[in-house]
Image (cartoon, rainbow, N blue to C red; front, side, top):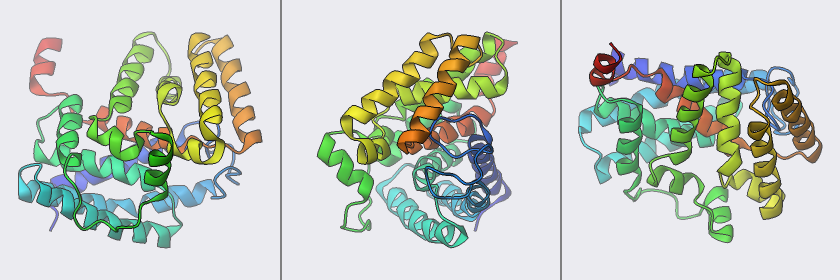
Amino acid sequence: MSSREDEALARAAVTALAGQLALAPKPGLPDPRDLGARVTRRDHRMLCWSAKALTPGLAAMAAAARRTGEPTPGLRTELGAIGRCTEHSVRLAGGGHRGALWALGLLVAAAALDPRAGARDVAATAKRIAAHTDKRAPRRPSRGSSVSAKYGAAGARGEARAGFPHIRRALDALATARSAGATEERARLDALLTVMSTLQDTELLHTAGPLGLRHVQAGARGVLAAGGTATEAGAAALAALDADLHARAWSPRGSAGLLAGALFLDSLPAPVSSRARAA
């Protein structure tokens, strides 16, 4: 049974996902400008609705972590079972969010293990959980793991086992853009592009292959090199990249899921030691 604290973590994670969905313009990704969601074939409103179906499962993951108390193999297996049930609920609600569920589930569980931890410590704890094997996982590999094996990409599992390096980079990008005076929307777009610029996104590898992935990474780097989305040149480069990815029907969904994870960690209270230094 989940507590108020568990439910609060779950709501914070879903709020972070909603923040990612509301962000625009996201190159190649559904956002409020495009309610037809041309790339993913899912209506943007349906994605927002189905995101709410994650809440009970994420609360259950937090409760499991709080009850277990340590990032054990047993916790990893229990999180996997809860995740599969949650995926089914999300499909009934309209689908989507599988990658976000993986990242957010691990991060919510890690945050529940130590409510006083800051963002980077939570990511480190999530790494310890992900290091274990889910002994009850289906034997049939997922599309993402098959693509990872084919191209030698880290994939979602490798990202988690490395401690979510792209989420940490997104957090750095958020801080840098905010300190430079960017609006929150532009700071989040810069964070998304930072992830896109280096992530071996298995969704892109599946649809576009290695050359397509490098094309998208170069486009994201170009926006950042132009000064980021808060500048006139960067905004123009972003618009060109967005049009290009929509025309090619390429969608960097892995990057979007990791941005949601970064926004969740960004929403956590700073640890006491950090607040003391800031004072």
